[in-house]
Image (cartoon, rainbow, N blue to C red; front, side):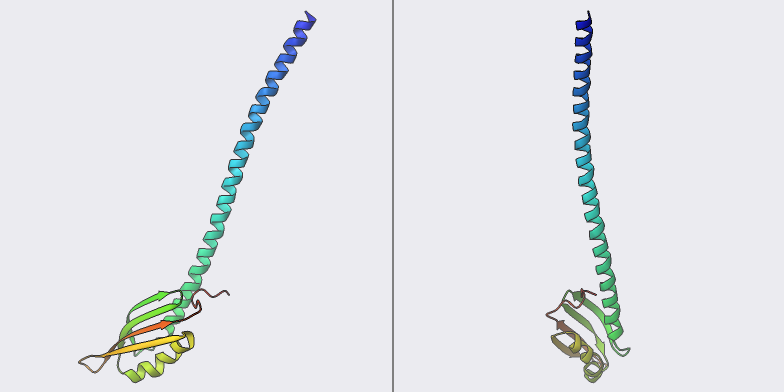
Length: 141
């Protein structure tokens, strides 16, 4: 009778140990999944911070670019890329463009070209294409 009791106790302990081991395996898998989620969330947080930083730099760069445009010159369109700027607009004269806008553009870009199209009212429509070898919009601060 004592042997049966001890055997039952041993069997009960073995079953409890097996359940414990199963539970431990399940918990270890859940921990691994949580750690993977934490890693993903941290990566997303880092990416979000990087995007926010790049957006601030881009916003400042665009703001600085538009601050360069003299009041006499009117832009109708601007295409901005990492190292490229294309502008379309109107100017009262070639001299105003060449004296007021061309120098700052040449100080920023390696290549600067502009084509003027005369209008009937004496003004000029222009297309300005500017290219730089460096990333002027995404400089590291």
